Image (cartoon, rainbow, N blue to C red; front, side, top):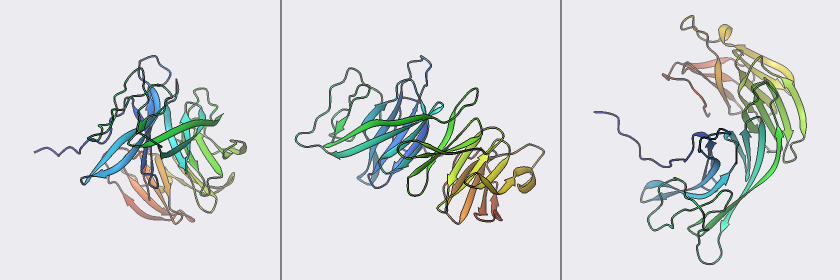
Length: 293
């Protein structure tokens, strides 16, 4: 007997590349798209309300934000500010959700998009590009703030973005191997340095101001501003299962431990300040694209 399929929570009308959850507001933020190619696949950021109904989790579309020709490939969340990686740029978005005064309404729209299954009794969701969608007495609006180019390789692409712990700074990394640090919300650049030979796969900012990066050059590095503190190299510090080359794929920070995931499915945990290995497991049969401690 095959494995039972989990119930579907949300089906996006575009390829999904990034997800964020705002627990305080009960929001799921999903982003992606078909990019600049004229395939008819839209680009957007969807804001969904998460609720428990009769013991089951339900998602209702609150707002569909049109990102025009730019697919969102990565997201970071700080309060009501989103940092969205779109091609070679980082776009800041501010969203506001509040109870709608008066009678519930849904703005009229010219066309419908396929979206999540609606709750029983909920008004059908209709929307147009850039329009607000109102449902169940809640309305949400999104505005574009600053945007800046964050990657300058011949085929530029921002691959990762994250906020620091007080949300005053933003770190980006991409295919050119450079880390760039920006003030929030002005996106004034305050630091830039070459962290890896080749693409940056992931980065994380710790509570002590240190930065961890992993890249295509098989290295995982800890930085204090632009100064290298310590470094792991997979071929020197990682396990050897075969002659196949491995590289670090993702990193996650807790302030005490550093978690690393690889393209081969291995997960390793190191002490953050010394990078002393404390755990290693080849627990997955496919690559680890992200992890959380």
